[in-house]
Amino acid sequence: MTDQALITQFQNGDSKEGAFTQLLKRHKEPVFFQIKKMVLEHADADDIAQAVWIKVWNKLDGFKQESAFSTWLFRVAYNETLNFIAQKKRIQGQTKQNQLEQEMEHPSTQNGLNETAIQIKLERAIAELPEKQRFVFMLRYYEAYDYEKIASITGTTVGGAKANYHQAVKKMTELIQNT
Image 1 (tube, rainbow, N blue to C red):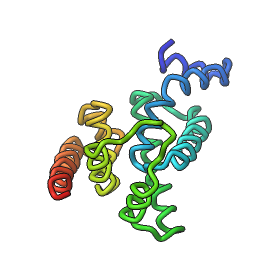
Image 2 (cartoon, rainbow, N blue to C red):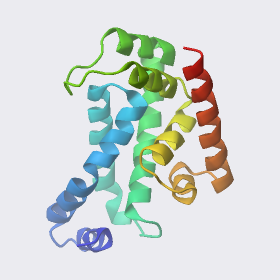
Image 3 (spheres, one colour):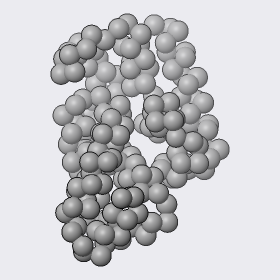
């Protein structure tokens, strides 16, 4: 069953829970990993993902299907992640550099994989990007989204999405070369 059919089923009230569960199963991993790349900490990504899916449940009746569901979903995830980052900065008063240093001092062992020096450099460079550039980079590099879809998700123009991506690549190249 397509996303559109599931959304229609949800909006018509025909087995809302079943339709939503199918959408959740289909899209939860890409949404989670996109969030995880922006916030680094697994627990934070879990919290944001949960907030995203609650918002999707509450707003899905009003979704007009003028864009692909995945585009709308990633836009919700993007906005929730930016809101979380801003709130966390206000509450803790930490800079991105402090968060990165804590992550590097106490690496997560949940996935059981040993991080290589290259992976650490890449993650450090990604973490130092401004939020919008980081998100655009993640969508383009890891999800292989085209610039039109990225522009739709982030609410920018195609040219703006391209500029954000190329600036991110340029900054990351400099950061990696200088470490």
